[in-house]
Structures are given as C-alpha cells and as structure tokens.
Image 1 (tube, rainbow, N blue to C red):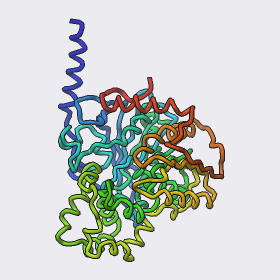
Image 2 (cartoon, one colour; image 1 turned 90 degrees about the vertical axis):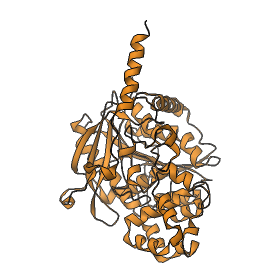
Image 3 (cartoon, rainbow, N blue to C red; image 1 turned 90 degrees about the horizontal axis):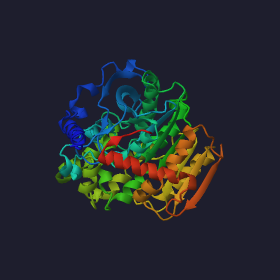
Image 4 (cartoon, rainbow, N blue to C red; image 1 turned 120 degrees about the horizontal axis):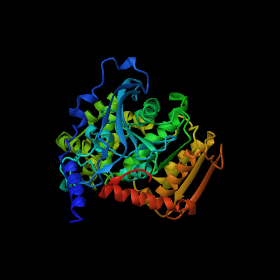
Amino acid sequence: MRWLPLFAVVTVNLWSAVSAAKPLPPTQDPWYDQPADIDTYAPGETIRSREISNQLQPFLPLPVDVSVEAVHQFLFRTTDSLGNPVAAVNTLIKPRNADPSKLLAYALYYDSSNPSCEPSYTLQPGSDPAGLPGIVSANSTLSTDTAFLAASLNQGWWVVATDYEGLDAHFSAGVISGQATLDGVRSALIEGPKLGLAKDARYAMWGYSGGSIAVNNAAELQPTYAPELNFVGAAAGGNIANLSSTLTTVTGGPFAGLAFGSINGLAKAYPNVSDWLEQSLVPEKKAEFDELANSCLIGESTGGFLKNVYLYFVNGEASFAEDVPQSVMRLAGQMGVHGTPKMPMYIYKPVHDEISPGADTDELVDTYCDGGATVEYIRDLAGGHASLWITGSANAMGWIADRLEGKEVSHPGSCTKKDVLLSELNADMIPFFGRELWSTLKWTLGGILGPH
C-alpha cells in the first residue's frame, strides 16, 4: 500500500505530459506575426511577450516531465542581413534555484530553413509531430544540442535561446544570425530583471557547429552593432568558418543534407540568391530539392545522406562559382570579415572536421589574432565534428563558468593555441562531464533542471 502515493504521482505526471496542449508551429501561430510598424521599435525592444509552460521537450518524445522554474518568450525587433528591421523570437529560461548574476546565450544548432524547426517551438513539449516513431521523420524536432542547454540550466544559469535565423529561418546567413543573437541578449537584459535576473548580471555566449554561425558573427558584429553590450566571453566550437568550402566538403557525404537547407536559407535572406536558385535548379529535381531543404535537421540529415547537391543544378558544381553565390557566401558565410571580437573567445575545433575544414578555422583564428583579439584556440588532432561536440564540451563549459564567475582570462589581448588528442580534459573541468551526464539523464527521463 505504501506504493500507492508514488503510483498516483507518477500517473498524474504521465497524464499531464500526455494531455498537455500541443503548441502551434510558428507559421500557424499569430503570436509570431511581425507588426506593420516594425521600424518604430529599437533593436532588442519587445514587441510582445508570453509565459509558456515551465516544461521543456524531453530528449525523446516520452511521457515524462522536464521542468524549470519559468519560461518566457519575447518577440523583439532585430535587423536582417540587408539592414531591414525584422522580428525574431527568444526563449528566456529560468532554472530552479537560478543564480541571478549569470546569463548564458546558448545558440542551439538547429540548421534548418524551416521556421517550424526553430528553438522557440522545438523546446516546447508536444512540438514533436509524430511521437517516438517520428524522431527520424523529415519534421522531427529532436535536438541533441539541447543536452548542453540543459546542463547550463542545471548549473543555475539563466539561459536565453534565440531563433537567430529570424522568423523565416535564414539558415547559414551569418549577418542576421549574429545580429539576432545580439538583440536576443539585449531583449533578455531588458526583460530579465523584471523576472529575477540581476541588472548587472554577467553574460556570455556558447554555440557549436551551426551555433557557431550565430556566436562568431555576433562576436564580430558586437563592437559596431551592439557596442553597449559587455560580454565576459564567448565559446564557439566546430566552427563553420567558410560556407563555400563547407558545402564542398559535405556534398556527397554523410552530412550532405546540410547543403540543401543552407542554400535555401541564403535564398530566403538574399533576393539575388533566390533568383539564382530559381534559374539554376534542374526543373525535374526542384521538388526533391525543396523537400530536403525544408526539413528539420534530422530529416535533412537522413534524407540528404550521401546526396550530391551539385546534381540538382543545371551547371553542376560550376553553378556555385558564379558571381551571385560567391559574393553572398563571402558576405554571409565567411567568418572574420565583419570585425574583430572584443570579448575573450574560446574556440575548439577538430583538425579533421568532416563538415568544415580545420584549416578554415586556423585562418579565422589568425585573422582574429592579427586584429588584437583575445583567443584561446584548441585544435583536436584526433576527434571529428560529432565527437568533439561531446569531448570538448566540459572544457568549454568550464571556461564559460570561469568567465561568469568574473575570473579574468590568463592572456588578455593575446592568443594561445594548443594541439590536443581527443580534447585533452583539464583536471578541474572533469566535474563538468558528470554534471552534463546528470543533466542529460534528467532531460531524457524527467526531472527538474537547476542546482539543489
């Protein structure tokens, strides 16, 4: 009989998870509508806000509760790649027992040009379209990157996750990704103090792979676009430093699906790319291209596996050597061209990256360092893109933790570079691996995110 109370609690929790109303996708939810007078709002200013469920979508679509103290969303004004005022959304998450002095802008890699794959939707329970069997579907909202967002919340940090591609999902467009990230932080600093965040909170950024597009571009653009912001640091790994070489690298390989969404994202951001794409696609292959290009990351990866994107273009690989894609990919897809970061940077990259060549990040770091940036650069000689996402996470999180604690970097105004094997783990960072594992278990099996 003593098990009956526990059984009742479990039953209620399972029922609440199953019966919770499903959120509307952004394209069907009028809350996301951009106002006609968007130009009257200042960058980062709130257009509308809402408090949503304090539960997050679990790693797998199981009937479990993954909860935090509170979740608020803000539709705010930002600036697109062409300088136009547009709206974007961020999700501000307060963990249990939150530390009001610490805010992390976590740039999830969602790598899709479909608005229904943006974090403000996919973080919500019930956003998965087809339950457990649907995790490999084209529109699966499964996001492995939420593991480290969960770990950050479990540290007690407030986390702001911005839909940095904008309302139309301009995947791979670096300028809007950077500016929306900065405005997402502006928004959090405006609205957060009303919810318990300290007015003088320290704040940092972190992103891996597609998330590095947001973080690196934000760091480059901050001195000119948001000079009042004073980040204590930014960590970026698996950097997509050069979009042109990245497309060449992934085409025909296991990550080939990324090319479809990336090209489509640029077409949404730049009208001349849209015209070029319309004229360049093989007519008989357009429908298949569009289907792949509008999938979420899981569907993009499975559907595009080993496909050669050049075969979808009338002139094949030569299409990408034309003036329009080359000029836009340099402006939108090459890091290091928008300025030198003023905030300390922690960059970690596999030399043998299967998505974006390690040499591109070597060149990026040299550019930053020549400009006087403060950079700690870790080059992994043995790992790959996916493995470093895991093995490099503890050192990255520990580095961020030091910055949020107010600790100065050891080499302000200079750069350090270190070659490691499988992301050599600093001894004092080992506890972060345990915390990440514990957070992942909570995210998968249910629990409350936040320190005890």
